[in-house]
Image (cartoon, rainbow, N blue to C red):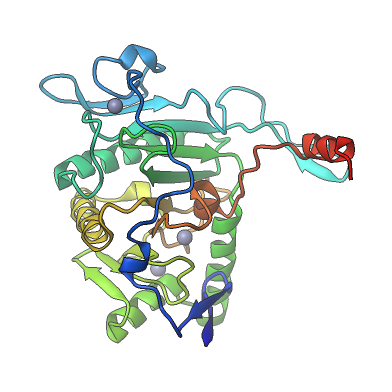
Length: 328
Ligand SMILES: [Zn+2]
Ligand SMILES: [Zn+2]
Ligand SMILES: [Zn+2]
């Protein structure tokens, strides 16, 4: 048997199989479908190799060197230079992928994860996100921020995450906004605030609760061990977080990933921060920012998961050309 469950926010249906539910042991030996092998090449993110990266946009210094460092991505999806030029191509819309794509190097040590990092180090990473978002928000071309992390990194094992500033609102967040606004119209309340109340009273899916955050498995989880971290107070913007909330969040993140680690022995994972669009025209005070996490155990991979975008490394024109030329 299986259950069809509807995500109350995006109204997406999810099939939950109930007959032979898989437990942690079913996932223990899983290896992500693609993963870089450690090479002997010098790591550009390790201390001493700063010259291998573009100049930093932000860093937190410590006695010797830095403890967190932010740099522009050498191979970005989005580029900061260029004209914001939305133009039609026949019936299709396109624009230059204007934006920013930065890498947050989360620690000087090459082998670290959110489970092994000290909360005080995670707090510095959160401060780096916050500070970069506040700065990037000044660029009025950017409508949406996304923070994304894959562990282990797809191209480098050194602990790092991505900050993306985009000129458009990704579909996943757009769907959430539609769901939130629709619910507001009918009930004059925030759906995330209502979900929090429901989960706190039902206690069936709560994993962790602190002064400022609730950590739970969403009712219509799309992935095994999907987990959300949601601020208990209604806040639309991650980067407006207060100092004590950041401190609380760093402890929450470390304990959640320690749990994953304990249950599934160092599983690969991803997490993404969903926050309101920025700029007056797009900002949504109704939005309730949150973090979504999941374990990368065999399903759709990182970027498409965080955004609803699928990454297609083959332009459709090329694909069509290949198809025309191949015998059939
Ligand atoms: Zn390294
Ligand atoms: Zn809310
Ligand atoms: Zn979300």
